[in-house]
Every structure is written in C-alpha cells, then in structure tokens.
Image (cartoon, rainbow, N blue to C red; front, side, top):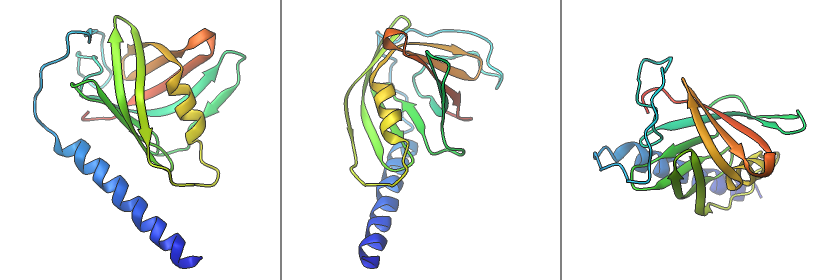
Length: 164
C-alpha cells in the first residue's frame, strides 16, 4: 500500500510539473480570437488590459445565492488560466483540468473539460469543477475576476496571478 501511495505521489508531481511546464513554456504571441472582447478598467497591479487572454487567476471563494460561502483552500491550489487559442487550463488541490472557453461580450462558457483522475481525500475539486461548469458571465474589476453562476447560483471570485 505504501509503495502504491509513493508511486501515485510521484505520478502527481510529474503530471503537475508537465502542466506547469506546458503552461509557462508557451510564450508565443498569438492573435486574440475575435470572440474575445477586451475590457478596460483600472487594475490595482498597474495594468489596464483586463482581458482574459493570457491571464491566470487563483480561486478565492464562491458566494452562493443563499449567502453561504465556499472558501478555497489557502495557497495557489486552484489556478485557472486562459490562452489566446480558446483553451483553458486549471490546477486543483488534486488534479489538472483542461478544456475550451468561449467569450461573447460578458458571457463565458467552458466546454470539453477533461481532467486527470487521481483520488484525493477531502478535495474541493468537485465543487470547483461543478461551479466552473455552470459559469454564465464574468466581470473583471481591478485584480478580481467574478464569474456569475447560472440561474442565480452565486458568484465565483478569483484574484489575478501577478505576471500573468
């Protein structure tokens, strides 16, 4: 059993490392898709370009419609990134996720999401993925990304990762 856990841990480190290498290593400037609308507002980190393309965001919490709050674990366990080719990627407290996203004005949707399948006890991953799957719109205010959930389900709140 101990050998299996060590092997699974090594596999997890390799998978996350590969995702990070892929994500950070792709520095090519690609054209912004026509369906991505740039929004401008003051950013507390100094940038005025607040479009999603080429940015990464750390999940802070989700405020549910009834007032309950689901708080993400501390640290950079849940990071969501947006690429210029319409691809998204995310790390969670257990696995990695990839898929596509489409933006139309302030409307956003995620599709074709796939993820690694490691089991992690007490993971918040399923809540996070369920919420991402029901995102309907977004707004960027300063260094915060707020993604509203369908049917008044609440709002996911992220903070921008510096440098991305």
